[in-house]
Image 1: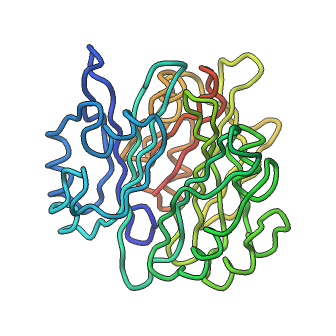
Image 2: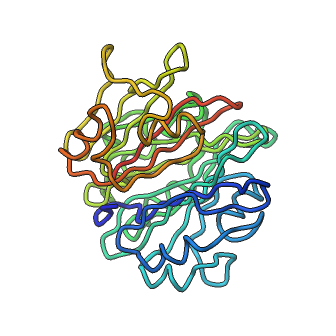
Image 3: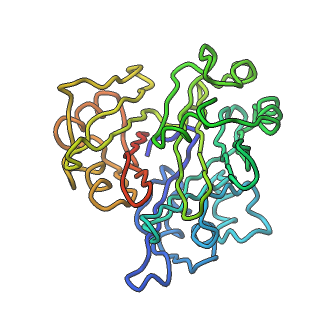
Amino acid sequence: MNTGKTFIRAVEVWVPSSDRSILEFGGGLYDKATRFAAISKTLCFGRGEGLPGQAWEQGRPIILKQFDGSYFRRAAAAHAEGITCGIAVPIFAGDFLTSALVMFCGDDEAHAGAIELWHNDPAQGNDMKLVDGYYGTTADTFEFMSRRTTIRRGNGLPGLAWEAGVPVFIEDLGKSARFLRAESATKVGINRGFAIPCPIQKNESYVMTFLSALDTPIARRFEMWVPDATREHLVFGGGFCETGGVLRPAPDGPSIDRAQGTIGRTFLTGVPAVSDNAGSEPAGFGAAAAEAGLESLVAVPVISEGRLSAVVAWYF
């Protein structure tokens, strides 16, 4: 995982055991955080234990910005690798938890960008509000503005994903009338964003937003794949590559079958999948990744009301 210049430093997947009593290690990308990786691969989490177990217990995404004194079980190893924040997203297919996706970020002197969690409870109103966010080290003003912003369905980046029910990408936040915090984002160097709806079991809505800065993008490439009319194949829905720019869908563009490569495996199982060899992906996708200098990827399902609506792929 080549994450030297990405906002996300590590990614891991936790899956229920055969008797669904614990979460077991299901794969990860750790770049040079080898000690943290070695410890993580030996662990399992009961419901409510550690960051994956808390996401399972609470049934919603979690942003944990303080490891010391918390339920996080790997604090010493994380700090030794410069990892200071964890984000856990439970993924449900109907009533069943398929997995928990965990992402890790870290602080350094120039670590701009943000990962945010937005929430709407219809019993409390029509707006979506910020639950919490991780803003790196250079986005204090943007964080201040975000915590005082409320968003209606269809407005702003979180509101667009909330309304659409599928991931939404905005190439240039500073020039977009759809991004409500454009001025404050531009001041701290945040220039691109994508938002992913995170359906849960309750009648509430969560959206995760990922906001990239030029020097520390969230990932080096972002793709969205959506089922075709037959739901037997995934077709390319667009994306962005830091070296190639906007990736637009085409009527005769590529498709992915179930279980074909990392993205197809997620299509088949509804569980996030990782690969540390992006160049080996089939049907020309690996060749394109290698040409762009991409080494690894994680594919993440978006499942709503028990049906897969999209697969998002992040490349590092």
